[in-house]
Amino acid sequence: MGEEAKIEFTVTVNWRREDGSIATTQLATLARGACRSAEDVGLQLADAKPILGRLQEIVVSEQLQRYCEAVRPCPRCHHRRHLKDYRRRRYDTVFGRLVVGTPRFDGCPHCGERCITSPVSELLPEQVSPELLHLQVRLAAQLPYRQAAALLDELLPETGGLNYATTRNRTLAVGKRIEQEIRKEIDHPRVAPEPAERMVVGIDGAFIKAGHTRTGQRHQFEILVGRVETSQRGGEAFAVVRDLDPYAKRRVQAILRRCGRGQDTDLRILSDGEDGLRGVVGTWFGKECQHRLDWFHVARRIARIEKEFLYLPCGDDFQERLAAHWANLNSMKWMLWNDGVDMAEFGMTRVRIGLFQHALAHPEANSERFESIEAKLDELRSYLYANRESVMGYAEAYRNGERISTAHVECTVNQLINWRMCKKQQMGWSRAGAQYLLHVKTAIINGRLDRYTGDHSVTGDIAA
Image (tube, rainbow, N blue to C red; front, side, top):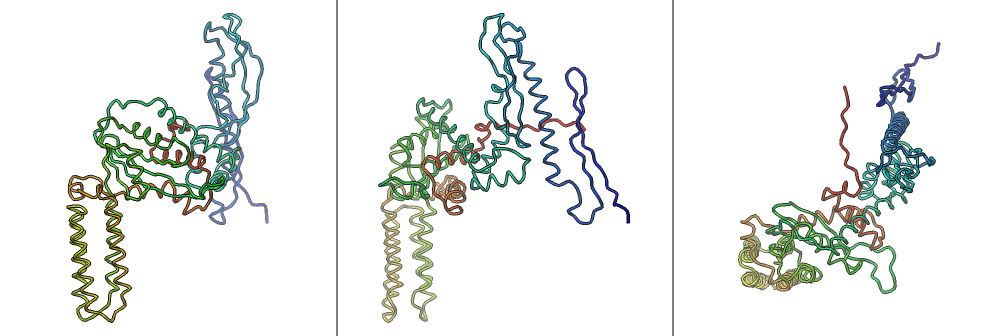
């Protein structure tokens, strides 16, 4: 039996230079035999990688050569400068690592300029393309650094800088750029040209494990997560490590100014009312803001009490008593929704009276279930009175279309922290490293990552 005939494909590239000359280069030759399975059909990723890498090398070389010729004349007197030497420069792209020749030009003797210039170094200040940096940082914000580096190494052509250390360093470097921008806003506060009339800020806290702790430091540290919403500008997420440095409070204030907070902005804060967050509201956001307790956490506490009624002692009249307990509890919830804590106190008393009557009707029953409900009622009462000034106006706010819940902030906590930094990935973090990564993740959520990676990719026109 003779040797099986194969189909050969030759991939070539032609390009036309400015002077009209046409250059041609063969990129690869591929041979394909008969198809015996789905694996034999079409190009494989391993086939495409070297082709794309070679094509990228040609495109970059031609572009840089044209650019260097264009900037070779002296910018002052426009005389052609002398070539001093050539250096070699490494440049990582999504289609492979390139080593390009970078010419250096002497100073101009005609106008007295003595500075030696390297046009390629000025054009490419970093050794990584903006597109690869953007892709690396975006993946590293969602996956552990090792997994992000391994995924890129699997999909992209042979490219340097795809190990986990370089991925981490490049990601944190972008976070440092964002931190520098915020520090600049802190040192030189800007006045919003068109301040927002109303601003709603939902906040929540989360704890993550500390990697290295000094003596006296806790093994966990807290991150304050929030979402800013204005009618004119939409929403924006933020996250700060509370005990990183004295700038945590000022970071949040700078972010609010960037979102349009002015002196006359009506600022409203939503939180779950825990002790730490109550302190943050007054000291970080100013005394002029209005604080509203998150209705989601209130309703969740009431729902737990409602479920406890199902486990009370049963009798012939259990369904009637159960309906009465639920009616009393819903009445208390309605009073809280419409009138605040003071009126809800009356509703809570009615719930307690119903429980007392139920207990008297079943003296033989174990009192643990009644005591459990009483404990939950006491906890709810303490929680409401600790946030008494913030529990009011839910019904009116709901009718006006205002926020009464921090459910959207809970989602932001999942996006920023839980999926990457604690629940899904149990790892330790330094406070500075966590803050830089949080800057990157918030930039992704806010749609601003390309501003810090320099990737403003626009699909070029391709001739048919």
